[in-house]
Length: 330
Image 1 (tube, helix red, strand yellow):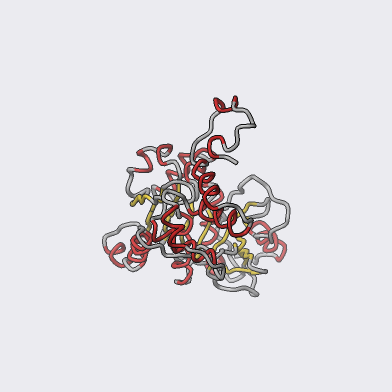
Image 2 (image 1 turned 90 degrees about the vertical axis):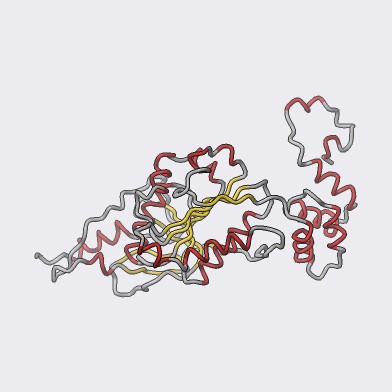
């Protein structure tokens, strides 16, 4: 086998390099099916893929100055004309609450049991992957549940990927598995209905059906509009195996959220929780800001926030401005 020239090796690395965020980005997703490369001894170099790391951003390389694993955490994938960026995302912890009276514990427990059941999946020849959908109104706490799941897999040394485009994800997944074939992964698909609208639906369905042999992967999706997904998603185990409704938080959950939000500010969270039935976490946050930060009237603010749940239409545009608070708006 002829020795590989330094120029050829450099070109290979250039083609696969994942550049630091901030370089030119190209919307095109390059082809990442790279043929095996042999070193001067004829050894397959693909088995030696490692990560080059810079400030939380990783690139695949064959260089000796590398690390074997990405640091556990959440990452975004972005395409350039040279390769894929794996850029670490800072995860906020201000809403990592385990709310009482919700399915959060059951959802996290389902995924925890899945990670512990690998041997059983292998023995029965079943793909070691899981799909879960969380649906409910905006601000109901879906994101808090997603973050708890992400925190759990990160504590296991795993990786979380944000899913935005099927081709981009497939390319990034293939590269990642060259270096870390056994690392547990959670794939977060927020606003799944929007992803289907903006992407190639058949490509996503093929991915969920196992076209890429996804292994040690949990696909965790959210949606506010389950009716837009249809039975092909909502009633199709093996694509998404469990579907959980996440309704508006109960009184105990609202009280916990308000207490956490208030911090050192003295508020009667129990009383406010009783007065805010049907309001979302987003509504409660605005209530706190409107009353305790900006000095508004509590009753008036609650009235306005309840009015925001009404869905305005163009038929309402004949209302004169002089009528204050029409439809619950200030």
